[in-house]
Image (cartoon, rainbow over all chains, first blue to last red; front, top):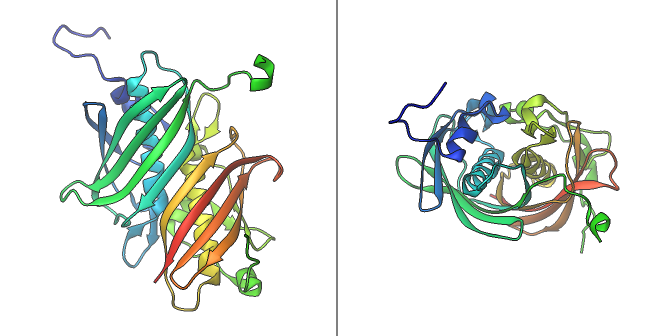
Length: 153
Length: 137
């Protein structure tokens, strides 16, 4: 369907998070916005990731998964042309585990691109209080499935 | 320096808690006490075009493997919590099962350091490695 005159074109990260990505089958993420190279996504800690059924705490893997996704999505938002990317490295610090149903915001900051590597940082916070639950830094390779290094020498 | 597992007998008899997260990841033990398996499911895909696993799913596998190793070795009644993880994605993944071998690097009174290597086809061609710091409390 054609876009009307008063409709703004969607940000690439908004398209990425509203598309039929496998992650949408288990985590409901909502695009909040992009400002000054910081992408913000909202979500609720899903029941599927609960690791302690007494306390309702979810596994730290949720933070790792969401931060990897949002940092990657933010890379997409910085590229002039959408191309596949791959996570090369991800370092995550976990302060507190989220609790099932807890409202969360995930923010990803674009730090820069050098050659074909994008450098990102991000955090997962409680949406109401701003308390930091996890922080991360990640590196992503732009364009995958290139020829091996030896083939290019 | 890697430290050999001090209580390997306990690791062999340790039962992985059946949590929603374990079921989501399809995480299980194997015949080797320090090797864990993630049975592939379509929801683990991160790049639908090349059918590669999601980096965060591989990261979760690294973290859960380290956690299960440490939980199995922790003194009775001690809880275990992941403090940090650093993961290198050394090779492209595909849509098949993922295995992880977790090794204890050092166990202190309050902190445990673990290293995890993941592979799909062969342990000789790893797809990811991770270093995890865990807190006993």
